[in-house]
Image 1 (spheres, rainbow, N blue to C red):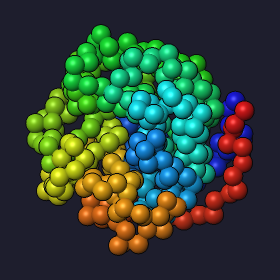
Image 2: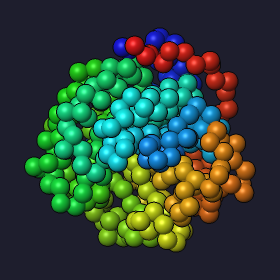
Image 3: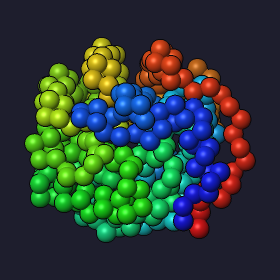
Length: 333
């Protein structure tokens, strides 16, 4: 069922979404309705089945109002007790976040958070077709069908054919929405996708990095992809090692931010979680409803929050606090 007129209008009428409208790919850039590049900066939630307590309206509103996020990412777990085993529960978490983002006037990524998505093609197609039907008129919604293919997954044999099936399901209902497609080796080999791109309009490719592990060599790979004519989005990055733990590498994180700014690449930081690891933005026990004092935010969280607030303000993209309307049916059947 399509969202109600009120549901769609709330997302399109105010905030950063009201400013830029539906996003589209133009050359190797993602642009807004005026054809100018749009750079979104925000946060990714954690695996939904393990730390799902932040999948709520209050957290989304706090990320908008205090952190000044212009995008949030709903990382719906698929395996390991996620959607494959508990579809109703995990899907509802995504709906809660998307509805909150639309009401808040920010963009939102619907992420099929899976390392083996091509083994679950039909389930993914059904899920994304339903999400596209539900949010067909919401300019806020961006689709991310494959979080991180593994190193042994072939772009041409495994990943690209999977995306083709899922994108067709999305396009039946949301023909113009932006889709960001995962790439080989944990979404690092964007150059492989650039050499053999998908034959759909309005498609970008996923680049992931963890600053203490992935350095200039990966920026060089991203540069080759951009030079090949494709658009990129960093739907997930960490300030730490690729494990999600270890040290916070501020120097390399800032090098990455310089690269993304120079190339108009949007990003989401991993993650809104209170797990006891360095990449988590919150300390254990942080409120599940936002309102986090500085004492509840980790070193990584403080670094990222400061960057989001500063850069989004400089870009004129800071989302002002605004009353949030009462929850409606969110376009639910």
